[in-house]
Image 1: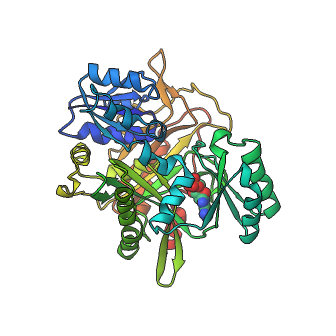
Image 2 (image 1 turned 45 degrees about the vertical axis):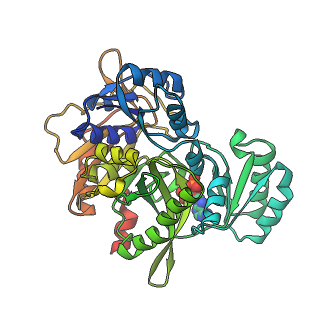
Image 3 (image 1 turned 30 degrees about the horizontal axis):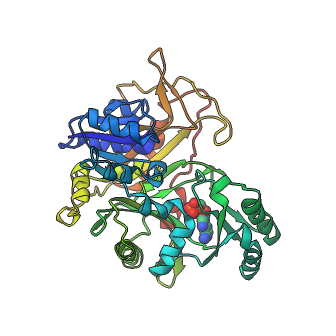
Length: 436
Ligand code: AMP
């Protein structure tokens, strides 16, 4: 069948790489894609927020399946647009409708969902400009640090963690009264701070049945030792060693099953990925999982370490997601560890240059075990691959152990260069230390 994948980052390159391997895939289109996705299929210059145009393209190119990479089209209702348009209703859309996408589109919705379905998460209070005083009072019942979250999508920037209560009050006021994050902060969730170790758990579901995909950990801060500004992600590893059988049993029983049952109970159909950002909080004999956030799509850069480990045909899995019989499939996962390191443009996540020529991509002598996924790249008029974003290219390597996978990735990075490229040298090191 012909498949259309929406998105343009490293996540989409990793997904395109797996989709293109499927025996069920004839033509793969990626909209808009990047210089890397062009090696897996045909890039299409489409505005993916224009659902009318996406639908027209799908019909004129005989597309049978649309896989949605990023959250914005899901939150804006692309799956509903396809379902409610007679000419498009037969097309399988992998990604939830607007109702399900609220799990990511509104923190208040997600917290109320978790409270309703008894899913472990930080205690919270949602406030608006009208109830600012209540917000101040709630803050005075909490201990530092204070967590403030803009309700809506804020490009990953809407969460503030502050050590001082007065500062927290001031920030809350700015979010609600001065629209610090625009419409996204018309409501603010104030939350109890949880300390522990973060990890990401991904679920593929047809709304009733599910597979839990490999666990991963991503590294969000720009600086070594997790310091400095937040980024879209500087690297990821999979699996996460402390997410052992006992921990994953808790995740399944306390989080995955209640989430799916909650969706069924609330009559929210859901066909796609659920990403649970978890805090593993130390407890006697191990860790207890708490949900920090839901996302309604795969994570980036977690996809770049999770997808290469999936051995099953992902398109076949997607077909069963659509058919609602995912229980008839098995998920096969490589026992190898995967390590992904993202290379970024100088200055990122502040201002950075675009258009620098990237060298080393065509080198035939490069080791086969490593995969190069493009994030912010494009091909210029001269046919050169150039930087086109802050996060530019990542390398994922697989090996029998995490240290070997990391070593392979770091050795490979030296082959790919451009003016001012940087990366973090400590991806995975925190977990390796925990293992010792
Ligand atoms: P979110 O966008 O909700 O994932 O939040 C961004 C980051 O803020 C998370 O990845 C955590 O590192 C941190 N964070 C969010 N909520 C909490 C919390 N309740 N306790 C501790 N850290 C948090």
